[in-house]
Length: 248
Image 1 (cartoon, one colour):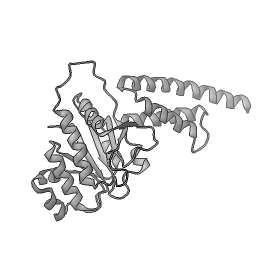
Image 2 (image 1 turned 60 degrees about the horizontal axis):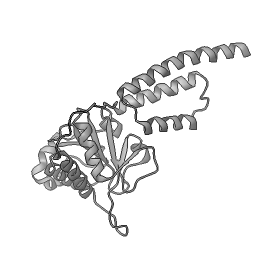
Image 3 (image 1 turned 90 degrees about the vertical axis):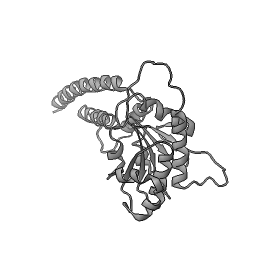
Image 4 (image 1 turned 120 degrees about the vertical axis):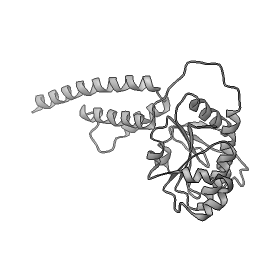
C-alpha cells in the first residue's frame, strides 16, 4: 500500500520485537522493513512473533548504519520518548502520518525510525533525521514497548493514507539526506579554504548546519546554495592566499 515508506529499527536487541514490529507493520499496510545492526537476526523468535508477516522478515534489508539505511530518503522521522532540543521539525503522531504520506505521494523516499528498546535513538542518529515524533501518554507511566510504538505510528500512517488525495498543487521535492550532507561537507570545505574556520571543531559551522537543517531547503534551493558556496570557495581561496602572500 505504501511502497515509498520504510520502517527502520536501530540495533533491536530482542529478536521477538523485530517479529512483532513486522506484524504491526503489515496490519497497517507497510511492508518495507530495514534493520540497522540487529543483535540477532534472523532468529526463530522473530519468525514466531511475526505470525503471518514472515514475508517482511524475508525481505528485510539489514544495514550497518542508520546513515546507510536512510541515505536516499528526503524525509526521515525519528521516534523519541520525548521531544529533544535539536534542530529538527517536531511532529505529533497524527502529523507524522500525514507528513510521511504527503511526501511519499510525491514520489519521494521517506522513513520512520525507531531506536533501541532501552535507550532509543542517540543524538548523533537523530542528526540523520529531518523530524522527530513523540507519542503522548500517561505522564506517570508513559512506557511503550517497541512493537506498540510501531503499531501506533503505523496506524497514523494508515489513517492518513485513507484520506482523499488533495487536489494537485505545486510539488516540493526535497533533497535526500545524502545530498544534504554532501552540501554540508562542501560548505565546511569552502569555509576552511577561506580561512573562516581554523580549528578542528567550530561552533560557527554547527550553527550554520543547524540553520540549514531548520530551514530545510528544497532540491532547487539546495542547488542554488551549492552554486553559491562554489563561488565563495573560489573567491575565498584567492583572497586567503593573497593575504598570506602579503603577510610573508
